[in-house]
Image (cartoon, rainbow, N blue to C red):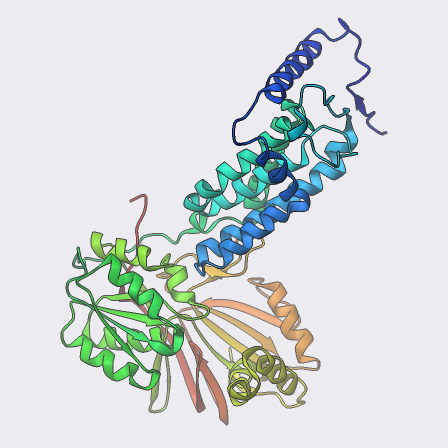
Length: 498
């Protein structure tokens, strides 16, 4: 059974009194807005509406947000475009086809505000208003600050549709409501980062550094950290910032630990790993300013930029987090994010071999092709009492979750668990790895197993096996033990709502 279209042009006076009154009020509001002179805005409003055709204005706004290079702004831009896409789909597939309302008459509209090319679709609801509201609401849900910047532009676009005579006010209101609803629907599928902030526990007692006094932050210049370090200095003028080359990071961190009340680090996950070892050894609280490409640990803490870290340092907000540890003979190390053996370390080693010649992404593609085409299993070890070939063994420091359709992240950095994922050996490694990735936290499949444990031991690891920990790669053999150091590291992080 199909639902008949609603034709707003055939309503007889008195047949639907309430609807007639609403439509009459809508027409009067349109005539008042369209007939009114808007000093200085008359030539601008048509251009604004044209600029928003096909979402061009919002794509440009998203590009400008992404160019700010802050994770929050990039997520806001992505969420805004996703909301816009859903709103446009709803308008074009449901709204325009369900209600056949003609466009308003142009008589009240001054010639300077009339569009040169009039729309040919039906009037209800306004697609421009839906797109504008969806983009603005999507951006605001992720970043209220950027939402406040975008909102006046979105409101002006919506207003322009009435003032240029192409929509009635109710068309615009309905489109805006649909756009806001689309933004909230996207948030239901992919929650904002503020919705999945890790719990602020267990709390730790640390010094509050009001202007950064006592903080010594070592910045790895190879990670392009100069701008972020300067931003932190602007927030905390008494903090000491030490910039150094990658080969000097470990030595500078050791020197900094001797005079710091809090040890700071700015760099990628490997640099943060080095700083964590120093902080553990000297029993200092660690302040992490993300400065690399992925920054998993900082982002899972809720620290995205200098403002986040400065707020935590000024307020003395910190938590204790777990640290993963591996040992193999005389080789020991820690990991804050992940530790893995098998295909992934080989991919990292192969990529590093080619990246300086052909660039990072091409090197990654070439490495994947070379490693996955081999018929040799990179790992054969005793796992859970059975010796078997494995393509990959991944251990996360804390349980990785999927939230909606979003990629995996950790919601609790002190859960005492190693999140172990295993891809069994066999033919077609690429297909097996893809199936395991899609399975996510599923406990078991023909090619994949996932368990959460506090300690794991691998025996009979063949010589030359590679182990990667937070992006660094080493050789291991014999027995490899992975375990947790519960709540071993104290880190600054902003705490909201507590």
